[in-house]
Length: 370
Image (cartoon, rainbow, N blue to C red; front, top):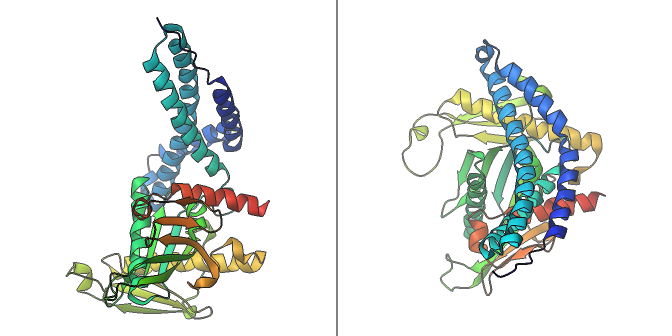
């Protein structure tokens, strides 16, 4: 029987150390207490008399249960990994050794992602997020690029099984979109996606240019937290103008047949929010007001803290404040200009493979603040 000397004890010890730090930051006892409290609230017979409160309680409970399950799972996987290494060495079993190496890599990835989440401790990091994408300089290519980014964030959300709703889309005349607003409802969506805010730049051979020249185009991404009901800013009716209009877009969906889309203009600040996702005007108005209140709260916090750069900021979609380049010609590369993180497969990135960029961005932001 061949001897196998599989020694990954140092790597396992490092993982246990990282796991201990994460466990302390997450606060497992506090998490268990919150789950017990929410379970009690969820068990009240008349819970669903207040649908909004019931949805919040059940959503918070499932988020926390998932977080605890992840912690418990990692602990047992680390224990099982040590047993697997012992078996592989005692039995001289190369298959078990290969399985142990694969499991080590898998746990390293899960812990790496979890470690990044523990860095999300800003005031609004745990909230849902509202992403607004706007085409910038670059004509038709820019509106096409804006649509590519919208699809990228929707695919990313889908891969993570996050709920993503397109609240508003303004289509461009020739191709693509002028702008889009997406709500991503998931734990820590704002903290995670806020590093995506900034100017994105695309370089490619333009499919809209008969001369086949390289074209550079830009799109701006803004990310704001969706505020909880407890944080809601009161907006007097006298401060807003509400316009209703027919939803725009391809096809003849029922949303296009009535004046159900709503545009709210906040007169004191000039902030404009549209929503045309729902079939009823009342639902669209409620969704638009939620986004408006989220933006107003952000403005208020910016003024209070005078820390504009921590929030969405004013993004102009031009050369000045680029944060990421997507190059499709003459070579293939996506590079983040803040973290220097890069990959050579733009197709995967546009298909939603963003975690590497997001994790690097969260770590970079933490270093930048310290």
